Image (tube, rainbow, N blue to C red; front, side):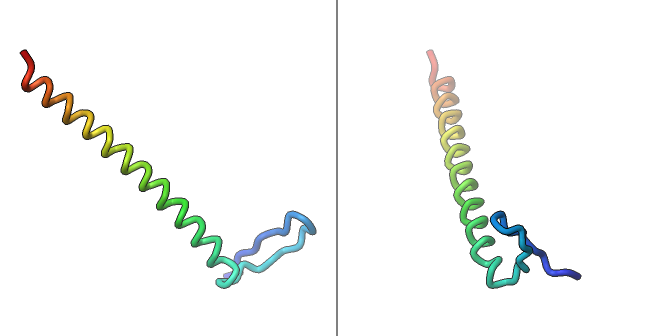
Length: 62
């Protein structure tokens, strides 16, 4: 199995993507993914709270 490579945008040379080079890229991707998931979780929690409030208002209605 061949090692993955990336192409340098400046010179066009191929760079082997070794573990030491890939680690920062993987970490940055992981952080971005976790931030997106946390934002999404907060949005869902906010919507669920709004639905609960609306239900409570309907249950205690006139």
